[in-house]
Length: 250
Image (cartoon, rainbow, N blue to C red):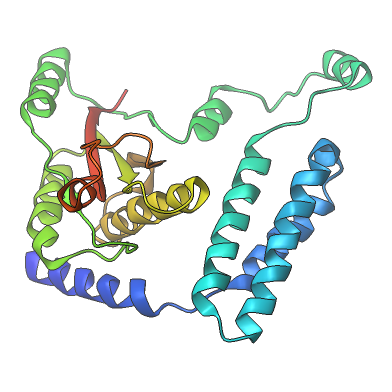
């Protein structure tokens, strides 16, 4: 199992450096936002994302791939924020909601929106649940680190990642939150996106090894929560990281 996992890790290390830039998905997302009448209050933000996409295409045609990718990353982050921010309802819309209640609204939808804490069925008994909680409490998750401006999984991080994988496989009632962090260099928007990529590449690895995506949550902190506040090479090395928080599923 570990040999197979190491092979998968190696593939991720290559793919994270050589994967093609898929700008088409960004354009499709922008078009969907433009056609969504419920997002009229976000027109300015949608226009800004579209302008970034246009600039990225121009840079790509000029063989400036790195600059183009940065523009696209910022555009994608704006798109995600737009989707998360609902426009305020008008009084008329509220009346409609009251007169026509949504019969499909239930707790399951809330769980999906939260994208975490899935309901785990068939937990044997309270005694075993206490044991599981003790297991989680006693497990100390090690941090893994990244090179500058990279979300490639380093070779010296593989053993740590495999250790976390073994823990998840052995404890199916446990979920994990993966937090992506960066050092302070670069813009806030770029660092948020880079932190997200660092968390997502780990999530993708766990999924390929049989961990259900419902057990995995990612969050990006960018440069917001440094492990070391000093502006030194050693501090930057400590801050380019992914941290893990293991929780007993509710």
